[in-house]
Image (cartoon, rainbow, N blue to C red; front, side):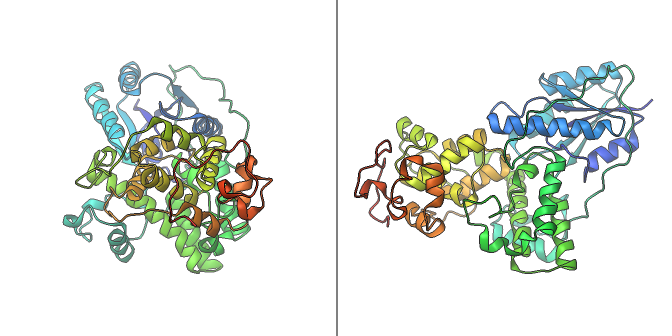
Length: 444
């Protein structure tokens, strides 16, 4: 009896799951395991989404005669013991970007029983084996996103997604069955699980055809439909990047192709780029200097940092973004860029403090995109351009009626919308809202 163990670190779906399909082909018995928690740094929103995703995935497995076994222990310690007990011949696990994630696999490979092999796959990327492709000049890595995009778009096409398996081998007979997993109730739009992710994809692309105006709305901050909001399901492995790409291309072929439909794929290429960049540079993006020669100038100040985290800097767009993030685990890309710029450029705090806080708060956190985007904003990535954002001008441009500010800053709701952008200059003082921690003469 060929027994295998599949450790799903961040792949809670049946669709486009090549590693699980391979394990199903090669094994007579299969134990499917996952970590019970989202991670030691995950906050309440990601933990909730993780629990919802696990429960939905467990239900899908049970419809195929399988179930999900949760681990509360360190997988590197626990999986070798489990492999020995089950006399397992293979442990299947997906590679993930990040130095800690790579270390886990290396240590696991060293700890498995001698007759148990480690099968490492690559999950939820558009392209496999990118560095080894002879059509892409390997000597040019790492590179800017623009160079990456030109090479990839001209020479490669993502592989088609793999359909969900119709059946799976049963769990090992000696492993006792567990009760179905129970998930916390839904909270707003961001409900964990493959079913919710696929429904969002179908709704956004085909049902309401919002994809046709994505480029025009993507900088909006107030509406859930301003952007695709696929990222929570992509980041938590409930939705496949290749499936999203494939469905957008199907829409382009069957319904309409325009600049907006292309731009959704463009954003997927950004996501892909950060994964390959992290692969190429190891743990460099976690250092203060990033990929550069020197760290940005910073003046550590715990008071300023805490005001930024709490959304109490006195700068409305930044505070609204940080309060939305705290309450929901999500905020728009436009809001994230402004909050990041303000922390690094105006408050002069270590950019890694911001990246770590986003890691804790974001429901759609993934290591490569988060740290890659923060390095990009701080000028410590492959592009060292100064990306200072005029946070007052940005608010006026992208929230012209100050509706977003009013939604997340109740202290400012009694102000005329035009006064919400710089409330310290309002005709009537605002009770309960702080003066700005810093003020820049360029703000307008």
